[in-house]
Amino acid sequence: MNIKPQPNHQQYLVALKKLGPEGRLRKAIELSEFSKQLFLEGLRSRFPEKNEVEIKVLYLERITKCYNRNF
Image (cartoon, rainbow, N blue to C red):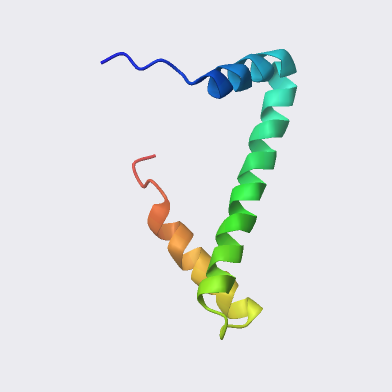
């Protein structure tokens, strides 16, 4: 099965290639931080009764479940 990238995805790949190795690394770090913040905001929204310490504990518990232990 051969799936063609969507036009926006293709444009994104071209833009990434233009960034060079350092720029791609910066972008990966930026996206990782964005994902973390989005995850935390989702937990805060889902568990409004929890304080910030409880949210961070919940975050760590959930992120540990996602970790690939095959490495």
